[in-house]
Amino acid sequence: MADIRSFEIVLRDSLHIKTIKTFLESEKKSYKKSNKDYILNIYKIIRNDKKIAIPISINFDINELSERLSKTTGLKNDRESENDQIDIISNCDFKIISGNNEETQLKIKSTETSKFDFKQLLLKYVKETDTDTENVLTDDVISILPSRWSLYPPLLLLPSNTFETDIWVSFVSKMGGATWVDEFYKLLLAKLTNNSNVYTHIAINKPIVENSNVMRVPVNLLPVYGDFSINLNHDKQNTEISEEILTSPTEQDFNKLFWCTSNQNGITQFWCPVFTMFSRGNIKEKIRILQTFKNIENNYIIDLYSGIGYFTLCYLKKNCKRIFCWELNPWSIKGLVKGAIANKFKYMVTYENEDLDWSKFDDDTIRLVIFQESNEYAIDRFNQILKHKNNDYKIPITHINLGLLPSSKLSWPIASSLIKDFSSASEKNLKSQIHIHENVGVRELDNFMEITTSDLTKINGQTVEPVHLEKVKTYAPDVWHIVGDFSIS
Image (cartoon, rainbow, N blue to C red; front, side):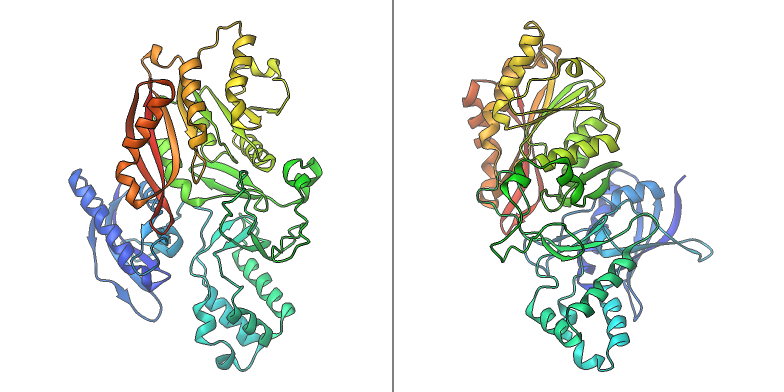
């Protein structure tokens, strides 16, 4: 049942007031157009020593409100750099105030953010360990403390330049060096730990290296605290990340390093942060798959760059009959397998130069078919399947995901040929769509769909129709991570 109550959005950072208030006002307008009074009133901002809050009254269902707020990634903050975006969940606390003034906390469905104040914790710790607090804990030190971070149990992941600046290094030196700061990190993790999640590691998220990094390994992850079981000091030459452990890890290697988890939209995902990436910004595209993509149920899907299953697991949750995945990184494959087990999807894995296990392949309960090899072999694999099925294997392939950044262009001919030679979708009056992930400059956005449609048409002479351009998130100043949807028949 919907209920009218007063509601407070308590901000952790005053810089975000305008951004979040603008978002709420746009939500109010959008609901007015659909003749549904969702947000009734947005009141004057409260400012006092204890809090900065935006009071509103809402006619809402709590579960619906939770879902909507959890999806507000990518809000642009005019006061920050062009490529810096925020989301409501990371930057606010939420309180519902009932009619009798009893406050209850609204549980937002997110495991990646924290209601936590670095400044207050550091201030308290400094006071306990140093009498000259004012001279040591300067405004410069306070200004470099993070206002945003991500929680991926057991890892606290901090943005670039946190706890590595000269100001922080000098401050730590004055306070007592490594022993003092380790105790602070230990205290920080203890504060974050709760009945549901234990936090034991801290790392700084560095940008991915684009050149010669086909397996998308986050080689600039900088450990701050905790046992990472491997030397990741990238300023030194004697790193322990060998080619062997990267490309041919053993089960012992998998068990030696720690793994992170995240739950988005009821889907649990796993990854080893040393060797694989996780982008929380992709949640927007995951939601789009779950809520707007048609013709998934009981049809066949192909993911040519599956990673840890960012989008693969979404298709499985939407009840595709089977999804075929290609991925080079064995650490990503292991994460995908862990995710399949956690979400109760039966799977099989076939390695490069290895024959398919036909007894497993013919088992229709196995809905996730993984190939640890280059997607260049995808057509060969389907020809093998066709031969096994006595040339009777045309399946309704309704979606092919091409999720490689900065460009997936090398796989366009593969996707086109898979639809042309192996899909029966058009015979069943279904559309086959490919979803092209690209990094596109703002000046190229207007022409991207038209140019890409032309390029796709030239590959196999198929009929290609542009369907939709989705702007997922900014990747760099004036560069967008986009997804272009194209229908091919």
